[in-house]
Image (cartoon, rainbow, N blue to C red; front, side, top):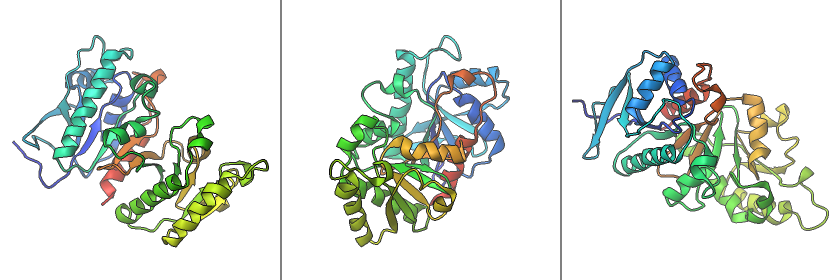
Amino acid sequence: MQKLKVIKPILIICGEPNSIFSEIIFKAFNKYKNKNPIVLIGSYDLITKQFEILKSSIRLNLVSFKENIFTNIKKNEINILDISYNFDKPFENISSKSNYYITKCFEKAFEIIKKNNIKGLINGPISKKFFLGNKYYGVTEYLSKKFRVNDKYSMLIYNKSLSVSPITTHLPIYKVSTQLKKEMIISKVLIINDFYKTKLLKKPKIAITGLNPHCENFFKLSEEKKLIEPAIKILKKKKIDIRGPFPADTIFLKQNMKNFDVIIGMYHDQVLAPLKTVYGFNAINITLGLPIIRVSPDHGPNFKMIGKNKSDPQSLIESLKFLDKIK
C-alpha cells in the first residue's frame, strides 16, 4: 500500500448529505486536475449512491488513516475516508442524524490536522441554520472556537482580481456598531496582510470602508473618527499599505476597485454583496488565523438544485486551484 509522506493532501469535508456536494465534487474532478491529492471525509456508501443517481461513473478510492499516516492515497482519484452514516434515502431531509454525521466528519478532520501535515481544508456546503443553530453565527466562527483562536481570525472572500473581508463576519447588523473595536480592525488587517505576504508573496494594497453612509454621522462622534481612522494610523505606522476610510457606496466603482487587492468593510453584506455582483461564484471563502488554511465554496447546500445535475462547480474548482497554488 502507498503511503503519502511528501505530498500534502487536501481534506474535503463532504458537508450536508442533502446538498449539491456530490454533484459539484465529481464535476470539479472532471474539469480540474489537481496537483495535490484530495481526500473526502464522509460516507463512502452515501456518496457512491448519490453518484449513481447523478449518473457519474467515477469510483471512489477508499483510504485509511492509521498511526498518523494516510494509506492507499491515489493522486488522480477521488479518495475518501469513510465516516459511517445510516441513511434511508441518498438525498434525505436535514435531521439530528445528519447533523451528527457532519459533526463526526469535522471531528475526524480536526484529529487529522493535529497529527498530519495537510495542504488545506475545504468544507462542502452546510446549512448553518440547522447545523449551527444558535451556537455560532457561521462556520467561520465555529472553526475559530474549535481551534481556540478566539478573535484572532479573519474571513476573506478571495478573488485573484479583488478580495473582500468583513470585520464583523456573520454578526447581525444591529450588533455591528456595538461590537466593532479598534483593536479588532487592527488585528484582522494584520492577519490579511500577513497572509498575502507569506502565502501569495505580495504586499497587498488595502482599502477600508467606513461604517456610516458617506463616512458621516452628525449626531455623535462617528465610528470613523473613534475607531477606523485611529486604526488606520496605527496600521500605517506598521508599514501596511492601507487607505481609507472610503464610503462603501463608491469604493466598488470600477475606477476605484482597480487600485486595490483587498477591500475591508465593517459588516458582511457591505462588501460581499458588491463582490458577488461583480464576480458571481468565481470567489472562495477563506478563514485565516487557523492552524491550517480553510476554504469553502461561496454558496450553500442549494436544496432546489439537488439531484438535477445542473449545479455549477466553479467555486469548488477555485477552492482547489487556490490550495494547489499557495505556498
